[in-house]
Amino acid sequence: MIIETIVVGQLEANCYIIGCPKTRRAAVVDPGEEAERILNKLAQGGWQPVAIVLTHGHADHIGAVGEINKATGAPVLIHSQDGEMLTDPARNLSAWLGTQLSFKPADRLLADGDTIEVGTITLSVLHTPGHTPGGICLKAGQVLFTGDTLFAGSVGRSDFPGGSHDTLIKSIQSKLLTLPEDTGIYPGHGPASTIGAEKRHNPFL
Image: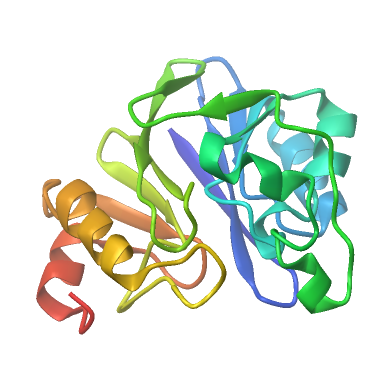
């Protein structure tokens, strides 16, 4: 598995390209802004996108969805409880940022336990609500893409509509901290970490 990280937009969200080196197929996770940079990175790597996966529906993680989808034809995937955030600027908070992001409905609505095939890579969907009702993490082997659920040294905000701090902490404790300590964490913002490091040093946990 090859992981490319592209930091995009004014809120510096991490967009990830998860690539299968055997097949050159890839998933684009959270294309928040700067579609041209993301498309250039895909072209440079010779990647064939087969899925655009959104860890949740906030504007800083979905802003380039329309352009990436149009350019590649890759289907858009989001958890069912965040599905309406793709089409509603009020729910995806883009209205708060002075824009009006609205896209077509997702091609596939995800649920806890679903899998996404990317060449020889299988991404497993972990439903981790709290930041948003439909927030998810994606597990691929010993690597976890945590969106805005869990960061290095912090956790996601829960003061936006649909958020709940208690639900967020419960999600992290029951779905993430039970994983092996050497599981790598690739969050929606900021640097990478591991489950073990967050167990020991994250002040919110």
